[in-house]
Length: 281
Image 1 (tube, rainbow, N blue to C red):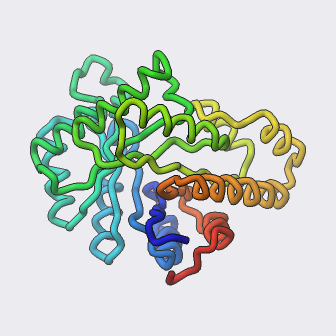
Image 2: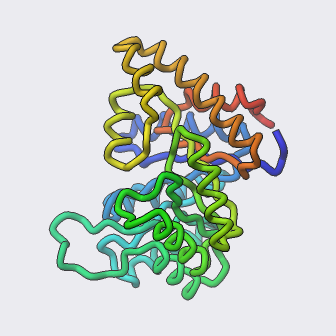
């Protein structure tokens, strides 16, 4: 693979010490593929803030470039500014800036919640100290009023100072290519990295996809349904399907890939091998 192709991996904060120990093993194994960075998710309303911060700082201190996901949620500007300052102290250089979801019971609170506001806030307080990633939706955010409205909103995040975007996962490459073309036509020149979701469990994937608006094409649903409880067949089909998707994206000038690992080494490791990556590349 070209040295210009960026790969990165996403984790979520484990809830147990055992899960954390396992994740360190996964991090070490995937770190041998020389990713640009790892990222760590941030629960709705900042519900995993402390666990996210601990994981990001520990990983970064250990020599693995790691980016926190961040949103305002129910936190004040002062709290978020202090959190970002702590990341800076640990030499974190990248932040994934996202729209905030308020915790339940805080419906009356009116803090800033939109990603473009968070990007502008970080730029105002910290200048260009951080590379800022934002989210993009090739199949359009489920709350968007229209396709063009969603692209305009993405442009607003870039206009506020974002450097690049990572997409929601998808299984139809044409959705990404058309989206990239429309973004370029709207004046967006920053790179938009495809988000890649390995397939290991159809029931979980279908439930999550229905909730977040990621489309599973009908033929893929029918094929996965045909395997029933045959987990090995689901995984084998998923590896072939996602390997082809990644190859198609990279062959048509996608700038890189961001893998949603679900804190698992496999099948992400096999997908990388299929794409020509090797450990300690």
